[in-house]
Image (cartoon, rainbow, N blue to C red; front, side, top):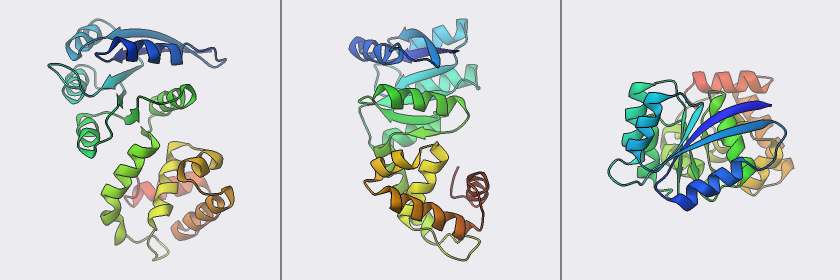
Amino acid sequence: MQTIKVLITDDHLIVREGLRSLLTQKNDQYHFLIEEAETGEEAIAKVKKQDYDIILMDYRMPKMNGAETTQAILALKPRIPILALSNHNELLYIKNMLEAGAKGYIMKDIKADELIKAIITVLSGKNYFSNEVAQKLLHDKEGSFRNKKTPSGKELSEREVSVLKLVDQGDTSTEMAEKLFISLHTIAKYRKQLKAKMQVKNVASLLKRARDLGFLE
């Protein structure tokens, strides 16, 4: 069983307790050691004294917000992955956290299985976004993809980009179908189209080529 040390930073006790409850539900793969910080300043003080595997960071907090706290922590320990956690899905907040160095952004109404998946994804070196956050980022970048060509000479549709990002996030086809409200058959079709347009035969090559061409960060 893998032990993961987590620092939950949020100014609301009920949120911290809720997240603790989600992470301490019985599972056979991960054991979470959890500490809490009520403010950005408290989180920084804790990080100075000890190491954490990951930090869950609220955005709106008194004095220092999540973006400011994230910047300060990464200045001290650049390798700590920080996952933003918020009730707010406004693009400004999302961008502020990502620009500060957060590796993902999830909503506070997240379920236990997705929270754990988000943590494990970020610990693996990838980004993770709740579905509604991913959609906001996708629409924000839609224009930049509109004229970007694949090796086949064809552009990716908005839906293909959505599927590509979920593939990169590690979602299964079933999870993609649920998030995008389409059938498994349609997901399979988009995955096939992505490989054809990128002129690759497997997922690893698809993600590498998409990243090389700027479709993924």
